[in-house]
Amino acid sequence: MNKVVLYCRPGFEKECAAEITDKAGKKEVYGFARVKENSGYVLFECYQPDDADRLIREIPFSELIFARQMLLVGELLKNLPPEDRITPITGMLMGVVERAGELRVEVPDTNEGKELMKFCRKFTVPLRNAMRQEKLLLAKENNSRPVIHVFFIAPGCCYVGYSYSNNNSRFYMGIPRLKFPSDAPSRSTLKLEEAFHVFIPYDEWEERLDSGLHAVDLGACPGGWTYQLVKRSMLVHAVDNGPMADSLMDTGQVKHYRVDGFKFEPPVKNIYWVVCDMVEKPAKVAQLMTDWLVQSWCREAIFNLKLPMKKRYEEVAHILQKIERQLQENGVNAQIQAKHLYHDREEITVHVRRIWSLYATERDY
Image (cartoon, rainbow, N blue to C red; front, top):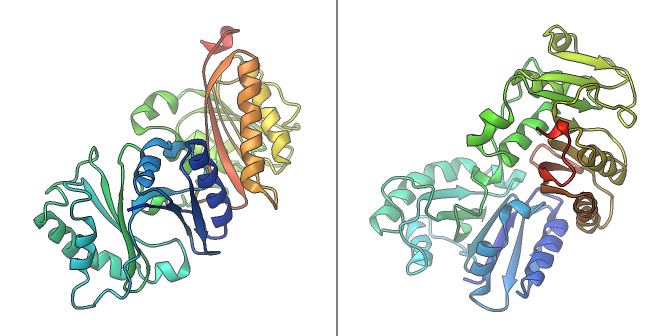
């Protein structure tokens, strides 16, 4: 097995290919990306057989922006016989992986892929039973063991392989399954909810998404992102010249400032979160968020960067490097993550968490 499959949003295969090629090259792993437009995945084929496993071990999945999932696969299985699809699939894994902790039978996030979902759900049970009999899969799910993936790209046509549970997406198809809350002011609320699921470990939610924390929402109108903060019992400073949803204002947890988000300064010193979904040039938003972090106006930030039309990966990588450099120059140690989320479109979502600062102020503690 010398190929890496990366799931992505249909239409962003070129960006995903550019990213894995760049990341692999930095590890002196060489190969080439196979890209089919609007397919919902990218195949990166390594020249050396052991390099693909090295990539899925050593490239931190959390640092990939455009990939929803990353796994090692072998050759494409074609024309699986309807009377016995299981034997060729299990045969691909013999001597490759054993006692995996989970099986996922998946498809690309395309209309064609969705037509295969009913078959995949029915096929998963007998395939799982067969894999357990062959000792490829543990009798009970175990999240510390590798995950087996069977990735159907067409009827009777699939890639078979595995990912490492400590370096993959924990979500089926790499997509958190979220339900739009009927009382939310806008569907944009799902962007921030997904960001919490992707960027913040569940065992840290009680501390980092705690009730009573103070938050600022820049460009808040009508309140889709504010809704997520209010839902978690935070006290929110909503900044926007436009109107906020009455349902949010009625909670008593929101104070509305009708000012420009680029000119607003927090009125209190204990802001934990700043979130921002303003439609502006990505470099301008990135600089605004960097300024907030450098001035210790917040502890964590989540913001969206609208993507340019061309060289998206290159531009995003440049902006993230600039944020990191400016924070370092100002003595701020921070964790930076970025992801093209399922609920994003022509944008990515960035999360920055200040760990410590050489120039800590009373705002920090």
